[in-house]
Image (cartoon, rainbow, N blue to C red):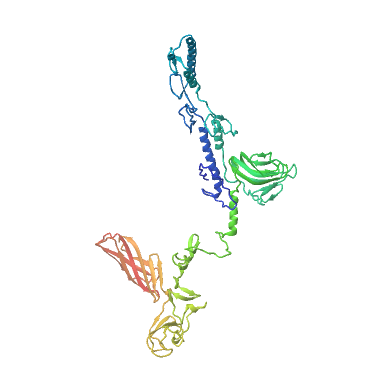
Length: 638
Protein backbone atom coordinates (compact mmCIF):
# COMPACT_ATOMS: atom_id res chain seq x y z
CA UNK A 1 0.00 0.00 0.00
CA UNK A 2 1.57 3.33 -1.07
CA UNK A 3 1.87 6.29 1.34
CA UNK A 4 0.25 9.67 0.83
CA UNK A 5 2.23 12.27 -1.08
CA UNK A 6 2.44 14.99 1.60
CA UNK A 7 2.89 18.69 0.79
CA UNK A 8 3.91 21.23 3.45
CA UNK A 9 0.86 23.41 3.02
CA UNK A 10 -1.71 24.97 5.38
CA UNK A 11 -5.04 23.64 4.12
CA UNK A 12 -7.82 26.20 4.66
CA UNK A 13 -10.22 23.44 5.64
CA UNK A 14 -10.34 19.65 5.91
CA UNK A 15 -12.60 18.03 3.34
CA UNK A 16 -15.61 16.25 4.82
CA UNK A 17 -16.60 13.03 3.04
CA UNK A 18 -20.28 13.29 2.15
CA UNK A 19 -22.72 10.41 2.27
CA UNK A 20 -23.08 10.33 -1.50
CA UNK A 21 -19.37 10.58 -2.25
CA UNK A 22 -17.94 7.54 -4.07
CA UNK A 23 -15.34 5.49 -2.25
CA UNK A 24 -12.26 6.01 -4.36
CA UNK A 25 -8.66 5.42 -3.32
CA UNK A 26 -5.50 6.51 -5.06
CA UNK A 27 -3.74 9.88 -5.36
CA UNK A 28 -6.93 11.82 -6.19
CA UNK A 29 -9.46 9.54 -4.52
CA UNK A 30 -12.19 11.17 -2.44
CA UNK A 31 -11.51 8.81 0.48
CA UNK A 32 -7.89 9.99 0.74
CA UNK A 33 -8.73 13.72 0.47
CA UNK A 34 -9.34 14.46 4.23
CA UNK A 35 -6.33 12.33 5.16
CA UNK A 36 -4.19 14.27 2.71
CA UNK A 37 -5.45 17.63 4.08
CA UNK A 38 -4.52 16.59 7.65
CA UNK A 39 -1.16 15.20 6.52
CA UNK A 40 -0.37 18.47 4.65
CA UNK A 41 -1.24 20.53 7.75
CA UNK A 42 0.86 18.28 9.98
CA UNK A 43 3.92 18.47 7.71
CA UNK A 44 3.47 22.25 7.49
CA UNK A 45 3.32 22.66 11.30
CA UNK A 46 6.26 20.29 11.75
CA UNK A 47 8.47 22.31 9.41
CA UNK A 48 7.35 25.62 10.97
CA UNK A 49 8.04 24.41 14.51
CA UNK A 50 11.37 22.87 13.53
CA UNK A 51 12.41 26.15 12.01
CA UNK A 52 11.02 28.08 14.98
CA UNK A 53 12.76 25.84 17.48
CA UNK A 54 16.15 26.79 16.06
CA UNK A 55 15.33 30.39 15.36
CA UNK A 56 14.32 30.99 19.01
CA UNK A 57 17.94 30.46 20.15
CA UNK A 58 19.24 34.04 20.71
CA UNK A 59 22.65 35.04 19.41
CA UNK A 60 25.01 37.60 20.80
CA UNK A 61 23.89 41.18 20.21
CA UNK A 62 26.48 43.54 18.79
CA UNK A 63 26.46 46.97 17.31
CA UNK A 64 26.40 45.41 13.86
CA UNK A 65 23.68 42.77 14.38
CA UNK A 66 20.48 43.00 12.37
CA UNK A 67 16.98 41.51 12.58
CA UNK A 68 17.85 38.03 11.29
CA UNK A 69 16.57 34.52 12.15
CA UNK A 70 18.10 31.41 10.62
CA UNK A 71 18.65 27.75 11.51
CA UNK A 72 21.33 28.69 14.08
CA UNK A 73 19.29 31.24 16.05
CA UNK A 74 18.24 34.88 15.85
CA UNK A 75 19.59 38.40 16.44
CA UNK A 76 17.99 41.82 16.76
CA UNK A 77 18.92 45.14 15.31
CA UNK A 78 19.19 47.78 18.05
CA UNK A 79 19.42 51.48 17.34
CA UNK A 80 22.84 53.01 17.87
CA UNK A 81 22.80 55.82 20.34
CA UNK A 82 23.13 59.37 19.09
CA UNK A 83 22.33 62.78 20.38
CA UNK A 84 18.76 62.32 19.11
CA UNK A 85 18.15 58.53 19.46
CA UNK A 86 18.39 56.07 22.31
CA UNK A 87 20.29 52.90 21.58
CA UNK A 88 23.49 50.94 21.89
CA UNK A 89 26.55 53.03 22.64
CA UNK A 90 30.23 52.19 22.53
CA UNK A 91 32.17 53.11 25.64
CA UNK A 92 35.55 54.82 25.59
CA UNK A 93 38.14 55.67 28.23
CA UNK A 94 39.36 58.49 26.11
CA UNK A 95 38.07 61.76 27.48
CA UNK A 96 39.79 63.66 24.77
CA UNK A 97 37.47 62.73 21.90
CA UNK A 98 34.76 65.00 20.52
CA UNK A 99 32.60 62.13 19.21
CA UNK A 100 28.82 62.44 19.61
CA UNK A 101 28.28 58.66 19.35
CA UNK A 102 30.67 57.39 22.05
CA UNK A 103 30.04 57.29 25.80
CA UNK A 104 32.58 57.61 28.57
CA UNK A 105 33.26 54.62 30.78
CA UNK A 106 33.11 54.75 34.56
CA UNK A 107 36.87 54.82 34.47
CA UNK A 108 36.77 57.93 32.33
CA UNK A 109 34.08 59.35 34.62
CA UNK A 110 36.29 58.63 37.60
CA UNK A 111 39.16 60.36 35.89
CA UNK A 112 36.91 63.33 35.20
CA UNK A 113 35.62 63.26 38.78
CA UNK A 114 39.17 63.21 40.02
CA UNK A 115 39.98 66.00 37.66
CA UNK A 116 36.95 67.94 38.91
CA UNK A 117 37.95 67.30 42.51
CA UNK A 118 41.41 68.44 41.78
CA UNK A 119 39.92 71.33 39.92
CA UNK A 120 37.89 72.25 42.98
CA UNK A 121 41.01 72.10 45.08
CA UNK A 122 42.80 74.16 42.56
CA UNK A 123 39.82 76.49 42.40
CA UNK A 124 39.82 76.91 46.11
CA UNK A 125 43.49 77.56 45.95
CA UNK A 126 42.94 79.89 43.11
CA UNK A 127 40.27 81.75 45.00
CA UNK A 128 42.97 82.78 47.24
CA UNK A 129 44.84 83.86 44.23
CA UNK A 130 43.96 86.11 41.45
CA UNK A 131 42.65 84.23 38.44
CA UNK A 132 43.06 85.81 35.09
CA UNK A 133 40.17 85.54 32.65
CA UNK A 134 42.50 83.97 30.18
CA UNK A 135 43.06 81.06 32.55
CA UNK A 136 39.37 79.88 32.29
CA UNK A 137 38.80 77.12 29.62
CA UNK A 138 35.65 75.54 28.12
CA UNK A 139 37.60 72.47 26.93
CA UNK A 140 36.82 69.11 28.45
CA UNK A 141 39.86 67.37 26.96
CA UNK A 142 42.55 69.73 28.11
CA UNK A 143 45.47 68.41 30.18
CA UNK A 144 46.61 71.87 31.21
CA UNK A 145 47.47 72.35 34.82
CA UNK A 146 47.41 76.12 34.58
CA UNK A 147 43.85 76.71 33.32
CA UNK A 148 40.49 76.49 35.04
CA UNK A 149 37.48 74.58 33.59
CA UNK A 150 34.48 76.73 33.03
CA UNK A 151 30.93 75.77 34.05
CA UNK A 152 30.24 74.91 30.43
CA UNK A 153 33.13 72.43 30.37
CA UNK A 154 31.92 70.82 33.55
CA UNK A 155 28.34 70.44 32.22
CA UNK A 156 29.57 69.01 28.94
CA UNK A 157 31.61 66.39 30.77
CA UNK A 158 28.64 65.53 32.95
CA UNK A 159 26.30 65.10 30.02
CA UNK A 160 28.76 62.82 28.21
CA UNK A 161 29.10 60.63 31.26
CA UNK A 162 25.32 60.42 31.72
CA UNK A 163 24.40 59.68 28.08
CA UNK A 164 24.58 55.85 28.18
CA UNK A 165 22.01 53.38 26.47
CA UNK A 166 18.82 52.49 28.33
CA UNK A 167 17.30 49.14 27.28
CA UNK A 168 13.54 48.69 26.56
CA UNK A 169 11.27 45.63 26.69
CA UNK A 170 10.28 44.00 23.42
CA UNK A 171 6.65 43.68 22.34
CA UNK A 172 4.78 42.65 19.17
CA UNK A 173 5.06 46.27 18.00
CA UNK A 174 8.62 47.25 19.05
CA UNK A 175 12.07 45.82 19.39
CA UNK A 176 13.72 45.34 22.74
CA UNK A 177 14.78 42.89 25.39
CA UNK A 178 12.84 39.60 25.48
CA UNK A 179 12.14 37.31 28.42
CA UNK A 180 12.12 33.58 27.64
CA UNK A 181 9.25 31.28 28.65
CA UNK A 182 10.07 27.62 29.32
CA UNK A 183 6.49 26.33 29.10
CA UNK A 184 3.71 25.81 26.55
CA UNK A 185 0.90 27.19 28.71
CA UNK A 186 1.57 30.93 28.70
CA UNK A 187 -0.29 33.25 26.35
CA UNK A 188 2.01 36.24 27.02
CA UNK A 189 2.69 37.95 23.68
CA UNK A 190 5.89 39.61 25.04
CA UNK A 191 7.71 36.34 25.82
CA UNK A 192 9.55 33.91 23.56
CA UNK A 193 9.71 30.10 23.79
CA UNK A 194 12.96 28.52 24.81
CA UNK A 195 14.73 26.09 22.51
CA UNK A 196 13.80 23.33 24.98
CA UNK A 197 10.09 24.01 24.42
CA UNK A 198 10.68 24.10 20.67
CA UNK A 199 12.22 20.62 20.89
CA UNK A 200 9.23 19.40 22.91
CA UNK A 201 6.90 20.64 20.15
CA UNK A 202 9.05 18.96 17.50
CA UNK A 203 9.00 15.67 19.39
CA UNK A 204 5.23 15.93 19.76
CA UNK A 205 4.78 16.48 16.03
CA UNK A 206 7.23 13.71 15.16
CA UNK A 207 5.24 11.38 17.41
CA UNK A 208 1.95 12.00 15.65
CA UNK A 209 0.85 8.87 13.75
CA UNK A 210 -2.26 9.25 11.66
CA UNK A 211 -4.02 6.02 10.80
CA UNK A 212 -5.89 5.24 7.63
CA UNK A 213 -9.03 3.24 7.19
CA UNK A 214 -11.54 2.23 9.81
CA UNK A 215 -10.78 -1.35 10.86
CA UNK A 216 -14.25 -1.89 12.36
CA UNK A 217 -16.68 -3.38 9.86
CA UNK A 218 -20.35 -2.39 9.88
CA UNK A 219 -19.55 0.55 12.14
CA UNK A 220 -22.81 2.24 11.10
CA UNK A 221 -24.80 -0.29 13.16
CA UNK A 222 -27.76 0.30 10.85
CA UNK A 223 -30.20 -2.13 12.47
CA UNK A 224 -27.91 -4.91 11.36
CA UNK A 225 -25.57 -7.09 13.40
CA UNK A 226 -23.44 -8.31 10.47
CA UNK A 227 -19.79 -8.80 11.66
CA UNK A 228 -20.98 -8.40 15.29
CA UNK A 229 -21.59 -10.85 18.12
CA UNK A 230 -24.20 -9.23 20.34
CA UNK A 231 -24.11 -10.59 23.87
CA UNK A 232 -26.86 -10.20 26.45
CA UNK A 233 -29.41 -8.66 24.13
CA UNK A 234 -29.68 -6.67 20.94
CA UNK A 235 -30.90 -3.09 20.91
CA UNK A 236 -29.89 -0.90 17.97
CA UNK A 237 -31.72 2.21 16.86
CA UNK A 238 -30.79 3.82 13.53
CA UNK A 239 -27.06 3.41 13.95
CA UNK A 240 -27.00 3.74 17.75
CA UNK A 241 -26.07 0.67 19.80
CA UNK A 242 -27.76 0.69 23.20
CA UNK A 243 -25.75 -1.04 25.93
CA UNK A 244 -27.85 -2.04 28.89
CA UNK A 245 -26.90 -3.60 32.19
CA UNK A 246 -29.55 -6.07 33.27
CA UNK A 247 -28.16 -6.32 36.77
CA UNK A 248 -24.85 -6.12 38.56
CA UNK A 249 -23.82 -9.60 37.43
CA UNK A 250 -24.50 -9.40 33.70
CA UNK A 251 -23.67 -7.00 30.93
CA UNK A 252 -24.75 -6.29 27.40
CA UNK A 253 -21.96 -5.82 24.87
CA UNK A 254 -21.21 -5.73 21.18
CA UNK A 255 -18.16 -7.77 20.15
CA UNK A 256 -16.25 -7.97 16.84
CA UNK A 257 -13.36 -10.30 15.97
CA UNK A 258 -10.06 -9.20 14.41
CA UNK A 259 -6.66 -10.64 13.57
CA UNK A 260 -4.48 -7.55 13.94
CA UNK A 261 -0.76 -7.62 14.84
CA UNK A 262 0.70 -5.73 17.78
CA UNK A 263 0.79 -2.06 16.85
CA UNK A 264 -0.33 1.29 18.14
CA UNK A 265 -4.08 1.75 17.64
CA UNK A 266 -6.59 4.44 18.53
CA UNK A 267 -10.23 3.63 19.25
CA UNK A 268 -12.77 6.45 19.11
CA UNK A 269 -16.55 6.66 19.32
CA UNK A 270 -19.39 8.95 20.29
CA UNK A 271 -21.09 7.92 23.53
CA UNK A 272 -23.99 9.23 25.61
CA UNK A 273 -24.00 7.61 29.06
CA UNK A 274 -26.68 7.92 31.68
CA UNK A 275 -23.87 8.15 34.19
CA UNK A 276 -20.13 8.69 33.81
CA UNK A 277 -18.31 5.56 32.59
CA UNK A 278 -17.70 3.33 29.60
CA UNK A 279 -14.91 0.90 28.84
CA UNK A 280 -13.44 -1.03 25.96
CA UNK A 281 -12.85 -4.75 26.55
CA UNK A 282 -9.93 -6.02 24.40
CA UNK A 283 -8.54 -9.52 23.93
CA UNK A 284 -4.96 -9.62 22.60
CA UNK A 285 -4.83 -13.36 22.05
CA UNK A 286 -3.49 -14.10 25.53
CA UNK A 287 -5.42 -11.99 28.00
CA UNK A 288 -8.27 -9.50 28.38
CA UNK A 289 -7.48 -5.81 28.89
CA UNK A 290 -9.94 -3.08 29.89
CA UNK A 291 -9.54 0.54 28.77
CA UNK A 292 -11.76 2.84 30.83
CA UNK A 293 -13.31 6.16 29.84
CA UNK A 294 -14.35 7.84 33.09
CA UNK A 295 -15.64 11.20 34.23
CA UNK A 296 -17.96 11.46 31.24
CA UNK A 297 -20.75 14.02 31.20
CA UNK A 298 -24.08 12.23 31.60
CA UNK A 299 -26.88 12.74 29.12
CA UNK A 300 -24.96 14.34 26.21
CA UNK A 301 -23.10 13.00 23.22
CA UNK A 302 -19.32 13.25 23.59
CA UNK A 303 -16.39 11.83 21.66
CA UNK A 304 -13.94 9.57 23.43
CA UNK A 305 -10.62 8.20 22.17
CA UNK A 306 -8.33 5.55 23.62
CA UNK A 307 -4.78 4.94 22.32
CA UNK A 308 -3.00 1.68 23.11
CA UNK A 309 -0.35 -0.73 21.82
CA UNK A 310 -1.56 -4.30 21.52
CA UNK A 311 -2.44 -7.15 19.23
CA UNK A 312 -6.20 -7.40 18.73
CA UNK A 313 -8.24 -10.59 18.47
CA UNK A 314 -11.57 -9.07 19.47
CA UNK A 315 -13.00 -5.85 20.90
CA UNK A 316 -16.13 -5.45 23.01
CA UNK A 317 -18.14 -2.35 23.90
CA UNK A 318 -18.97 -2.81 27.58
CA UNK A 319 -21.54 -1.22 29.87
CA UNK A 320 -19.89 -1.35 33.32
CA UNK A 321 -23.25 -1.49 35.05
CA UNK A 322 -23.77 2.23 35.44
CA UNK A 323 -27.01 2.82 33.64
CA UNK A 324 -27.82 2.91 29.93
CA UNK A 325 -25.08 3.79 27.41
CA UNK A 326 -25.69 4.75 23.78
CA UNK A 327 -22.82 4.42 21.29
CA UNK A 328 -22.43 5.39 17.63
CA UNK A 329 -19.73 5.82 14.96
CA UNK A 330 -17.10 3.51 16.49
CA UNK A 331 -13.75 3.70 14.73
CA UNK A 332 -10.45 1.82 15.10
CA UNK A 333 -7.40 3.11 13.22
CA UNK A 334 -3.67 2.58 13.31
CA UNK A 335 -1.65 5.39 14.94
CA UNK A 336 -2.13 7.66 17.93
CA UNK A 337 -4.67 10.13 16.63
CA UNK A 338 -8.42 9.73 16.41
CA UNK A 339 -9.79 10.33 12.94
CA UNK A 340 -13.04 11.76 11.65
CA UNK A 341 -15.40 8.80 11.42
CA UNK A 342 -15.60 7.00 8.10
CA UNK A 343 -16.88 3.51 7.27
CA UNK A 344 -14.54 0.62 6.59
CA UNK A 345 -13.72 0.28 2.87
CA UNK A 346 -15.40 -3.15 2.91
CA UNK A 347 -18.67 -1.52 4.01
CA UNK A 348 -18.51 1.04 1.21
CA UNK A 349 -17.69 -1.65 -1.33
CA UNK A 350 -20.64 -3.76 -0.18
CA UNK A 351 -22.97 -0.76 -0.41
CA UNK A 352 -21.72 -0.03 -3.90
CA UNK A 353 -22.27 -3.64 -4.91
CA UNK A 354 -25.80 -3.61 -3.50
CA UNK A 355 -26.56 -0.46 -5.45
CA UNK A 356 -25.05 -1.98 -8.58
CA UNK A 357 -27.11 -5.12 -8.16
CA UNK A 358 -30.29 -3.05 -8.05
CA UNK A 359 -29.53 -0.54 -10.79
CA UNK A 360 -27.01 -2.07 -13.20
CA UNK A 361 -26.69 -5.09 -15.44
CA UNK A 362 -24.26 -7.71 -14.13
CA UNK A 363 -21.33 -8.73 -16.31
CA UNK A 364 -21.88 -12.37 -15.43
CA UNK A 365 -25.40 -12.27 -16.85
CA UNK A 366 -28.62 -10.44 -16.12
CA UNK A 367 -32.02 -9.46 -17.49
CA UNK A 368 -32.76 -5.93 -18.62
CA UNK A 369 -36.27 -4.64 -18.00
CA UNK A 370 -35.98 -1.62 -20.29
CA UNK A 371 -34.62 -0.65 -23.70
CA UNK A 372 -30.89 -0.52 -24.39
CA UNK A 373 -29.83 2.60 -26.30
CA UNK A 374 -26.28 2.87 -27.66
CA UNK A 375 -25.44 6.48 -28.52
CA UNK A 376 -22.05 6.32 -30.21
CA UNK A 377 -20.55 6.82 -33.67
CA UNK A 378 -19.48 3.15 -33.63
CA UNK A 379 -22.64 1.69 -32.11
CA UNK A 380 -22.55 -2.09 -32.14
CA UNK A 381 -22.82 -5.25 -30.05
CA UNK A 382 -20.11 -7.90 -30.26
CA UNK A 383 -20.30 -11.39 -28.82
CA UNK A 384 -17.28 -13.46 -27.77
CA UNK A 385 -16.88 -17.13 -26.95
CA UNK A 386 -13.96 -17.84 -24.60
CA UNK A 387 -12.32 -14.58 -25.65
CA UNK A 388 -12.76 -15.23 -29.40
CA UNK A 389 -15.02 -13.03 -31.55
CA UNK A 390 -18.25 -14.93 -32.23
CA UNK A 391 -20.86 -12.52 -33.64
CA UNK A 392 -21.41 -8.84 -34.41
CA UNK A 393 -24.48 -6.60 -34.83
CA UNK A 394 -24.19 -2.89 -35.52
CA UNK A 395 -22.72 -0.16 -37.66
CA UNK A 396 -19.92 -1.25 -39.92
CA UNK A 397 -18.11 2.10 -39.98
CA UNK A 398 -18.61 5.43 -38.25
CA UNK A 399 -18.70 7.32 -41.57
CA UNK A 400 -21.83 5.70 -43.02
CA UNK A 401 -25.12 4.19 -41.91
CA UNK A 402 -24.55 0.61 -43.08
CA UNK A 403 -25.57 -2.06 -40.57
CA UNK A 404 -24.24 -5.61 -40.51
CA UNK A 405 -25.10 -8.93 -38.89
CA UNK A 406 -21.99 -11.14 -38.86
CA UNK A 407 -21.12 -14.63 -37.62
CA UNK A 408 -17.33 -14.82 -37.22
CA UNK A 409 -17.41 -18.58 -36.64
CA UNK A 410 -19.17 -19.28 -39.96
CA UNK A 411 -17.77 -16.28 -41.85
CA UNK A 412 -21.36 -15.39 -42.75
CA UNK A 413 -22.80 -11.91 -42.89
CA UNK A 414 -25.69 -9.77 -44.07
CA UNK A 415 -24.96 -6.15 -44.93
CA UNK A 416 -27.86 -3.67 -44.88
CA UNK A 417 -27.00 -0.82 -47.25
CA UNK A 418 -29.00 2.18 -48.35
CA UNK A 419 -30.04 0.65 -51.70
CA UNK A 420 -29.74 -3.12 -51.21
CA UNK A 421 -29.13 -6.05 -48.91
CA UNK A 422 -25.85 -7.91 -49.44
CA UNK A 423 -25.05 -11.43 -48.29
CA UNK A 424 -21.85 -13.42 -48.70
CA UNK A 425 -23.73 -16.75 -48.53
CA UNK A 426 -26.81 -18.15 -50.33
CA UNK A 427 -30.17 -17.20 -48.82
CA UNK A 428 -32.77 -19.88 -48.10
CA UNK A 429 -36.45 -19.83 -47.24
CA UNK A 430 -36.83 -23.08 -45.37
CA UNK A 431 -35.17 -25.65 -47.62
CA UNK A 432 -35.61 -23.52 -50.74
CA UNK A 433 -32.74 -21.46 -52.08
CA UNK A 434 -33.69 -17.86 -52.82
CA UNK A 435 -30.37 -16.40 -53.92
CA UNK A 436 -27.23 -18.03 -55.19
CA UNK A 437 -24.04 -15.98 -55.58
CA UNK A 438 -26.19 -12.85 -55.64
CA UNK A 439 -28.37 -14.04 -58.56
CA UNK A 440 -32.13 -14.47 -58.30
CA UNK A 441 -32.97 -18.03 -59.25
CA UNK A 442 -35.25 -18.24 -62.37
CA UNK A 443 -38.70 -19.45 -61.35
CA UNK A 444 -42.13 -18.52 -62.70
CA UNK A 445 -41.78 -15.20 -60.95
CA UNK A 446 -40.04 -14.12 -57.78
CA UNK A 447 -40.70 -10.63 -56.53
CA UNK A 448 -39.32 -10.36 -53.01
CA UNK A 449 -41.23 -7.15 -52.45
CA UNK A 450 -44.57 -8.92 -52.81
CA UNK A 451 -43.85 -12.06 -50.80
CA UNK A 452 -45.38 -11.91 -47.34
CA UNK A 453 -43.76 -14.75 -45.39
CA UNK A 454 -44.53 -17.06 -48.31
CA UNK A 455 -42.37 -20.00 -49.23
CA UNK A 456 -40.34 -19.48 -52.40
CA UNK A 457 -40.47 -22.50 -54.69
CA UNK A 458 -40.23 -23.37 -58.38
CA UNK A 459 -43.60 -23.80 -60.07
CA UNK A 460 -44.89 -25.80 -63.01
CA UNK A 461 -44.80 -23.28 -65.82
CA UNK A 462 -45.43 -23.12 -69.53
CA UNK A 463 -44.00 -20.34 -71.73
CA UNK A 464 -47.32 -18.49 -71.69
CA UNK A 465 -47.27 -18.41 -67.90
CA UNK A 466 -43.99 -16.51 -67.70
CA UNK A 467 -44.50 -12.92 -66.49
CA UNK A 468 -44.49 -10.05 -68.89
CA UNK A 469 -40.98 -8.87 -69.58
CA UNK A 470 -39.40 -12.20 -68.77
CA UNK A 471 -37.35 -13.90 -71.45
CA UNK A 472 -36.09 -17.13 -69.97
CA UNK A 473 -37.74 -19.23 -67.29
CA UNK A 474 -37.14 -22.51 -65.55
CA UNK A 475 -39.81 -25.20 -65.33
CA UNK A 476 -39.61 -28.43 -63.39
CA UNK A 477 -41.60 -30.13 -66.17
CA UNK A 478 -39.99 -31.81 -69.15
CA UNK A 479 -42.61 -30.84 -71.76
CA UNK A 480 -43.70 -27.43 -72.95
CA UNK A 481 -47.31 -28.23 -72.22
CA UNK A 482 -46.47 -28.58 -68.52
CA UNK A 483 -46.36 -32.37 -68.48
CA UNK A 484 -43.61 -34.83 -67.66
CA UNK A 485 -41.06 -34.91 -64.85
CA UNK A 486 -37.73 -33.16 -65.19
CA UNK A 487 -36.28 -29.68 -65.55
CA UNK A 488 -36.44 -27.48 -68.58
CA UNK A 489 -35.40 -24.01 -69.60
CA UNK A 490 -38.21 -22.27 -71.50
CA UNK A 491 -38.54 -19.03 -73.40
CA UNK A 492 -41.42 -16.57 -73.35
CA UNK A 493 -41.62 -16.68 -77.17
CA UNK A 494 -42.10 -20.43 -77.40
CA UNK A 495 -45.53 -21.89 -78.24
CA UNK A 496 -47.00 -24.21 -75.70
CA UNK A 497 -47.41 -27.23 -78.00
CA UNK A 498 -46.19 -26.45 -81.53
CA UNK A 499 -44.32 -24.00 -83.64
CA UNK A 500 -40.70 -23.14 -84.22
CA UNK A 501 -38.55 -22.82 -81.11
CA UNK A 502 -36.77 -19.50 -80.65
CA UNK A 503 -33.71 -21.28 -79.25
CA UNK A 504 -32.57 -24.76 -78.39
CA UNK A 505 -34.27 -26.50 -75.53
CA UNK A 506 -32.34 -28.11 -72.64
CA UNK A 507 -34.03 -30.40 -70.17
CA UNK A 508 -32.97 -32.47 -67.17
CA UNK A 509 -34.76 -35.75 -66.69
CA UNK A 510 -33.68 -38.44 -64.27
CA UNK A 511 -29.95 -38.89 -64.57
CA UNK A 512 -29.64 -37.32 -68.04
CA UNK A 513 -29.36 -33.88 -69.61
CA UNK A 514 -31.35 -33.76 -72.88
CA UNK A 515 -30.97 -31.41 -75.79
CA UNK A 516 -33.62 -30.65 -78.42
CA UNK A 517 -32.57 -28.87 -81.58
CA UNK A 518 -35.67 -29.41 -83.75
CA UNK A 519 -39.39 -28.74 -83.69
CA UNK A 520 -40.10 -31.98 -81.90
CA UNK A 521 -42.20 -31.82 -78.79
CA UNK A 522 -42.02 -35.50 -77.98
CA UNK A 523 -38.53 -36.64 -78.89
CA UNK A 524 -35.15 -35.51 -77.56
CA UNK A 525 -31.93 -35.38 -79.40
CA UNK A 526 -28.52 -35.97 -77.81
CA UNK A 527 -28.40 -36.91 -74.12
CA UNK A 528 -25.73 -36.56 -71.46
CA UNK A 529 -25.80 -38.83 -68.48
CA UNK A 530 -25.34 -37.08 -65.16
CA UNK A 531 -22.79 -38.27 -62.67
CA UNK A 532 -23.06 -38.06 -58.92
CA UNK A 533 -20.31 -36.24 -57.06
CA UNK A 534 -20.03 -39.25 -54.79
CA UNK A 535 -18.76 -41.20 -57.83
CA UNK A 536 -15.59 -39.05 -57.91
CA UNK A 537 -13.33 -40.53 -55.22
CA UNK A 538 -9.85 -39.54 -54.04
CA UNK A 539 -7.84 -41.45 -51.46
CA UNK A 540 -4.29 -41.24 -50.07
CA UNK A 541 -2.93 -44.36 -48.40
CA UNK A 542 0.71 -44.10 -47.39
CA UNK A 543 2.72 -43.37 -50.56
CA UNK A 544 -0.27 -44.31 -52.74
CA UNK A 545 -2.77 -41.83 -54.22
CA UNK A 546 -5.96 -43.30 -55.69
CA UNK A 547 -8.43 -41.52 -58.01
CA UNK A 548 -11.70 -43.19 -59.08
CA UNK A 549 -13.96 -41.78 -61.79
CA UNK A 550 -17.68 -42.40 -62.46
CA UNK A 551 -17.00 -44.15 -65.76
CA UNK A 552 -15.04 -46.87 -63.92
CA UNK A 553 -11.52 -45.60 -64.63
CA UNK A 554 -8.99 -45.65 -61.77
CA UNK A 555 -5.56 -44.05 -61.59
CA UNK A 556 -3.05 -44.94 -58.87
CA UNK A 557 0.40 -43.50 -58.22
CA UNK A 558 3.09 -44.93 -55.94
CA UNK A 559 6.66 -43.87 -55.06
CA UNK A 560 9.50 -44.62 -52.67
CA UNK A 561 12.94 -43.04 -52.09
CA UNK A 562 16.31 -44.83 -52.18
CA UNK A 563 20.00 -43.81 -52.16
CA UNK A 564 21.91 -45.06 -55.23
CA UNK A 565 20.60 -47.95 -57.31
CA UNK A 566 22.48 -51.05 -56.15
CA UNK A 567 20.03 -53.94 -56.01
CA UNK A 568 19.05 -55.41 -59.37
CA UNK A 569 16.97 -58.33 -58.24
CA UNK A 570 13.25 -58.73 -58.81
CA UNK A 571 11.08 -56.46 -56.65
CA UNK A 572 7.34 -56.11 -56.13
CA UNK A 573 4.66 -54.00 -54.42
CA UNK A 574 0.91 -54.41 -53.94
CA UNK A 575 -1.45 -51.72 -55.14
CA UNK A 576 -3.36 -49.97 -52.32
CA UNK A 577 -6.61 -50.75 -54.18
CA UNK A 578 -6.70 -53.69 -56.55
CA UNK A 579 -7.67 -52.90 -60.14
CA UNK A 580 -10.59 -54.71 -61.79
CA UNK A 581 -8.12 -55.99 -64.41
CA UNK A 582 -4.39 -55.78 -65.00
CA UNK A 583 -3.53 -52.08 -65.38
CA UNK A 584 -1.07 -50.30 -67.60
CA UNK A 585 1.98 -49.34 -65.48
CA UNK A 586 4.45 -46.58 -66.37
CA UNK A 587 7.65 -46.50 -64.23
CA UNK A 588 10.03 -43.56 -63.75
CA UNK A 589 13.31 -43.15 -61.80
CA UNK A 590 14.62 -39.71 -60.77
CA UNK A 591 18.28 -39.40 -59.65
CA UNK A 592 20.40 -36.61 -58.19
CA UNK A 593 23.80 -36.46 -59.91
CA UNK A 594 24.36 -39.56 -62.00
CA UNK A 595 25.19 -37.60 -65.17
CA UNK A 596 26.79 -40.41 -67.17
CA UNK A 597 24.51 -43.22 -66.06
CA UNK A 598 21.31 -44.51 -67.56
CA UNK A 599 18.84 -45.65 -64.87
CA UNK A 600 15.35 -47.02 -65.12
CA UNK A 601 12.80 -49.65 -64.15
CA UNK A 602 11.30 -52.50 -66.17
CA UNK A 603 7.81 -53.87 -65.43
CA UNK A 604 7.60 -57.64 -65.50
CA UNK A 605 4.90 -59.41 -67.47
CA UNK A 606 3.79 -61.52 -64.55
CA UNK A 607 2.33 -58.47 -62.85
CA UNK A 608 -1.37 -58.80 -61.93
CA UNK A 609 -4.28 -56.50 -61.15
CA UNK A 610 -3.16 -56.40 -57.50
CA UNK A 611 0.66 -56.85 -57.55
CA UNK A 612 3.29 -55.14 -59.67
CA UNK A 613 6.63 -56.98 -60.31
CA UNK A 614 9.62 -54.96 -61.57
CA UNK A 615 13.41 -54.65 -61.78
CA UNK A 616 15.71 -51.61 -61.53
CA UNK A 617 18.73 -51.15 -63.79
CA UNK A 618 21.64 -48.77 -64.45
CA UNK A 619 24.49 -48.38 -66.94
CA UNK A 620 28.08 -47.32 -66.10
CA UNK A 621 27.57 -48.15 -62.39
CA UNK A 622 27.82 -44.54 -61.31
CA UNK A 623 26.60 -43.34 -57.88
CA UNK A 624 23.29 -41.59 -58.60
CA UNK A 625 22.81 -40.18 -55.05
CA UNK A 626 19.26 -39.85 -53.71
CA UNK A 627 16.71 -41.38 -56.10
CA UNK A 628 12.92 -41.54 -56.25
CA UNK A 629 11.26 -44.55 -57.92
CA UNK A 630 7.72 -43.80 -59.20
CA UNK A 631 4.90 -45.84 -60.76
CA UNK A 632 1.73 -44.69 -62.56
CA UNK A 633 -1.01 -47.29 -62.92
CA UNK A 634 -4.02 -46.71 -65.18
CA UNK A 635 -6.89 -49.17 -65.20
CA UNK A 636 -10.47 -49.64 -64.10
CA UNK A 637 -12.10 -50.11 -60.72
CA UNK A 638 -15.34 -51.44 -62.19
